Length: 578
Image 1: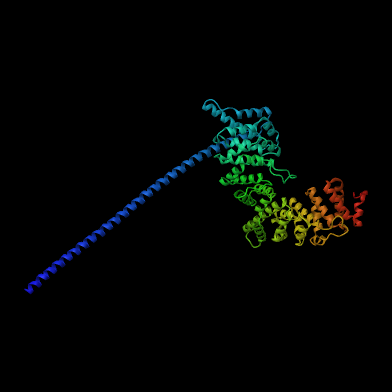
Image 2 (image 1 turned 60 degrees about the horizontal axis):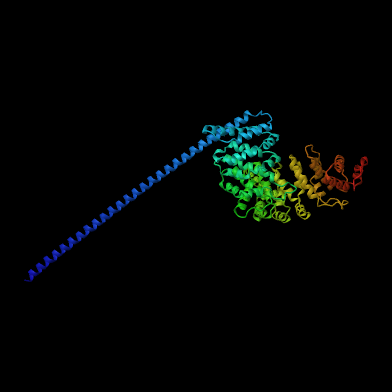
């Protein structure tokens, strides 16, 4: 019985084991199925993701292709316009070339052209187009008549006939796309002229109308417009005698939001020329007036300072001129030249050119020239002793003297000489600080330069430095600078410069004053020098302006303290006027 139980128990256990095994196999099969399904899902997901990426890639390709098509379309439009502009320019130049022998225009001729410009564009489309073409031809005729002519008589007649008003009306009544290079250039040619003509143009109040052209799509039109405006602005600058006054056109520019329009054009960065003239125009309008605080002041001043290093000589000169106007305002001055600027200038001027390659030398000298142009611009209009002391304390004067003394004389350009000259137009206290740095060997060396303007500035610097010697009431004393000047043969070199046939009268006079001042109470031992200098000073007493007369009398009195000199002075009964 027991054996049977065990057997049945064994079978039951085996059955359960088989059941468990089957269950495990089923579980394993389900697990495998789930894993297989999972792998299938992952594979499907990967496939879906790949499909999505493919679709996105195709979409990007379609988008890119559309962009390319859009760009190509724009390029075709631009090319078409370029061809049109190019054709118009060819027509314009052809018209000019064929009209070089134009006869003098009469007022009736100008009135006829003025009427052509003002003709109403009515009729059929073809008739309107013919009228438009006639107006373009009229503008080309204006340009052909006036371009390259130095005589302003034709321009005066044209303005009297109303040509300027007719052109401004054309710019006002036509859409921008109808205004072409021929139209704006025929206006521009009037501003490329004498101060008198520019003033006549400015009296027509052109600024609001020309500002409208800043929105033109043709950069050539915008460029001619802004240059015409810049030229016209020149007529509003104060005279040299009233240099501290503000620009007379400022209110007119401001009333049409012109400053913001100039600055917006500046920021558009359409071309270097347009950007240059936008910056220069803002600077010109703010002559002796504080620039608006913030971005305009900071960016315009920084940009104009950068133009001091420009490759183009006119741009460099214009930026310097406009900086000179800006520094008349103390706020502008503080932005133009800071302590950091003086430190940079000092470091730049200390850079040596010895041992450098030629290209590197050119880069160094160009930067040094730019720094000197900035110094000259700042110093010319503001005799600021605090600033001059700062310049000296930074070692800038030492570096200038070193450059003038040691550079190959062929490398010494006007900016170096002019910057030093401006430092000598100052008080005796400042000049004594400069004198302590022994500048005469450098200055005397420059008298060998060929350029008469450079020699003139050098002699003027020497003249200014000599003024810290004996005054007119101390003429019995010898000049204390004479030994240092004589040590480098300075008196003879001054006389050589005086004797040059290419020297202007003012330069000869200044050289004679220098020699007379240096040799006061001393005999002029060189017979040729004695006769020439004394005769010249005597001629100035009767033939010079008031300043020259007084300067000549003072030098003659100083020389007359020596009996030999006095005998030469008194020849032919000459007596020094009281």
